[in-house]
Image (cartoon, rainbow, N blue to C red; front, side, top):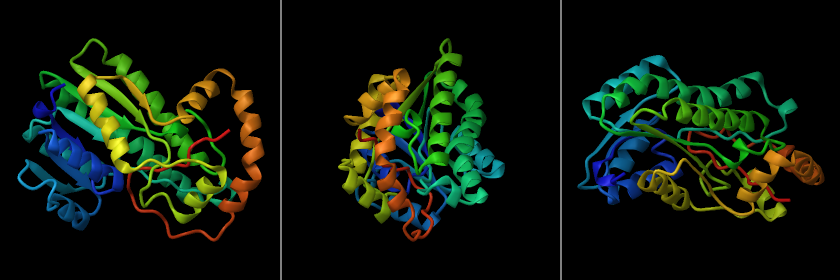
Length: 281
């Protein structure tokens, strides 16, 4: 699509990747309706030099609530939104036995259920436009279940499957559905423990603009799916056909993963785009 014609609703906009996506799309001429749970962070983003002079509206909303999703849809319809980008997410790190049931429920609610329900609420709005796009941002861990990230992996597997099914369900409509799977990314969600684990395992990390470039690319070229990074793309495919090999490789990493997961927990991460440690054989 021509990004000059894009009118975008972007969730998780105040996060590291979200702000990078907003700035990149603004430079390409897109009009933006930005949302995040924190109005102060949204206000700072909207005032950023990279967004000055562009058509930007910032609205605080909690996408896990029906009331705020409904309000967003009203704003989206008034703005003629024709692109929905689901980016909001959290990334808790720890062995499942050490996590609370509330932690697990929150991860699935923010990462999986909220974007599904927002897509559901936005479909009537998008169907009234001549051409529309949905971009769901997942993770490498939407294809590889990784120790220490059980709930996170489950949420990203869910959004990957949802995106694939929705793309096929809407194949004969004017709505195109896309999936972007980042690998490890340098945002505030990549806590010190995650970065230390990445470093010990020799895992590389992307900058937020690398992911923003991929999001822009799927819209420009209308590509169905994009997986970032090597060897992550390779292992995502390998896990689909030979999961036993991946099982054995990850078993060797378990002592390192358990050691970092057992360290004193950092403060709970705020809602932001996810930044999961990527797979290393």
